[in-house]
Image 1: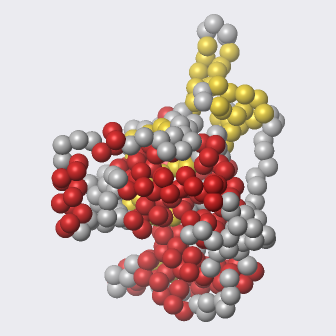
Image 2 (image 1 turned 90 degrees about the vertical axis):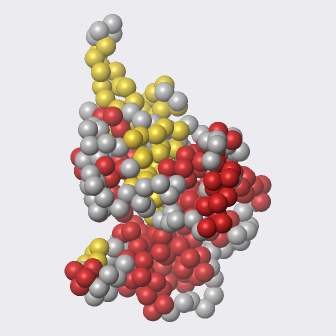
Image 3 (image 1 turned 120 degrees about the horizontal axis):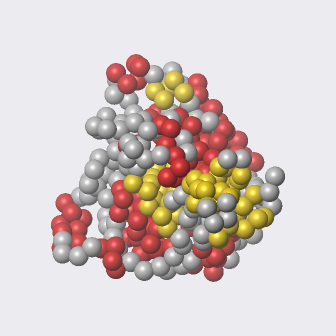
Length: 343
């Protein structure tokens, strides 16, 4: 069956491309020019999101690893601001979806509409057809609408009425959500959460950062000052450079041991999936590339284990009653699993 690829809003018939698997071999240093734009993107985002360098670094890591980012925290701490500032810095096509209880799956992926002139149905693309999709308050939509993102995020395509439409590359979903106990929210299905490479919490700014926020953003919209510092072509080149970062067999085994340990923990009802191991190795590659290295280290894995694994874990009832968090379980796992001797 033929697929349709979208370039902007114009569909073109094309064959479905094979997915390129990240390469674990080879130790060639990623050319500095391939990742030069990453520094510009980081600087651009930090002009809006101040006092959160680790959060910005994680978001940039997920972008270069070809993943999707979930930003979870209470209202008003800058979740949407982080997503929009990253999107505006990239110079790619951007769509924003405000998830509400009455949002339909067809609003997200698109729908076939009858055209009286041609006497045939034509496809009207939904908001998912963009390089960067900002999904605001994703857990305010019904589970049926949330599930419309499953195929998009995993396979980079949309299937409507038996026809497959390929999404543009790069493709990244940056979704925000409020904590599950907030009014009017629906918990994300486990399959949905597992498709997000990493989850970050914004947290409240420290006193000095909040004062600086009032001084710099009190009168003007900070997003108005952001201009694109790269484009889709350069982002694709950076993602390809990250795929050339070497990951040793010992580090592969270390990642598998970390993930497997979460499944046997008495505090965990559902542990991390094999997909989480794949996401962790890709994120480690991106972290190494951002550090200027051609190879990943256990330090890269340990630094990203929390953001990549914690949101996937379902804790036992006893762990909930003891107020143990998934992040604490991941941190304990990192402490328990032996670290390989070399890179």
